[in-house]
Structure formats: structure tokens, C-alpha cells
Amino acid sequence: MVKVFLRLEGLAVALCAILAYARAGAGGWAPFVVFLLLPDVLGLVPFLVAQQRLDRRPAPAGRGARGRGGEGRLLPPGLFVLYNVAHAYFTPLAFAAAGLLVSGAPYWPLLGWVAHIGLDRAAGYGLKLYPYFRQTHLQLEEPSLRGW
Image (tube, rainbow, N blue to C red):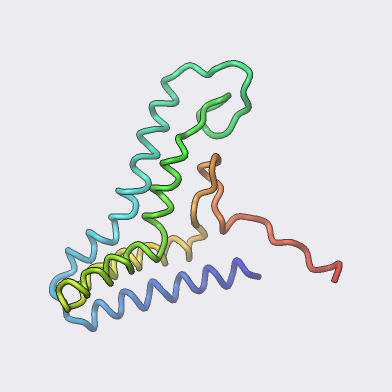
């Protein structure tokens, strides 16, 4: 049930970000789309590059499988941090606050970043859990309440 609420919350955030940008009349949609795609450029592309490098490298013996790369191939933990920073609400909000303090005016295209995160949450994608690339915080199993 919690997962459903988190997905609905993500959808609501995405819709509010899109509607707020449309109502702000901040100009064209191109800057919004750039920020809509930015989290995946910052967070997902480095994962794909690292995964290709791991696929080309021979696996060391005696270590457990941790991902698509096979036996003993681990993606660097820094990639998980980068992905999670790019896909956390605090990042575009921190940039928005800093911009507001410096210029005194909101930078509306940052709402594209917020919309991206909301759409990811609505689709069931969350923050990545090291060392499993495909495991996110939204995919964890909820504890059973039957024993209460």
C-alpha cells in the first residue's frame, strides 16, 4: 500500500511541476525539456558506460554475482551516489533556492527536473541501492502487518 501512495505522490509532483511551468509563462518548453532529461544524463549515462566497461573485462574468480556484469563485477559506489543525487528532490530544490537567493527570481525550467523525478517515482523507479543497479528503494518489500 505504501508503494501505491509513493507512486501517486510522484505522479502528483510531476503534474504540479508541469502545470506550474505552464502557468508561469516562463518562455518556451525547450529549457524545461533539457532539465526534464538532465537527471538521466547525470545519473544514468555514467552507469551505462561503466556497465559496458565491466562487460568487456574478465571476471575475477571467487566473488559473488552482483549485477548484470556477472561474477564479481561491481559498479563503483560513486555511481550510485551520483545517480541518487541527480534523482533526489533536494537537488533541483537546492539549485532553485540558490538561484533565488542570488538573482531574486525563480528559474522555472528547474521544474523539469522535479517533474522527471516525479515521473520516475510514478513509474516505480526510486533511488538506487548499492551494489544492485536494478534495486531501488521503491522495490523493497513491505513488512507484513499480520502479526499485529
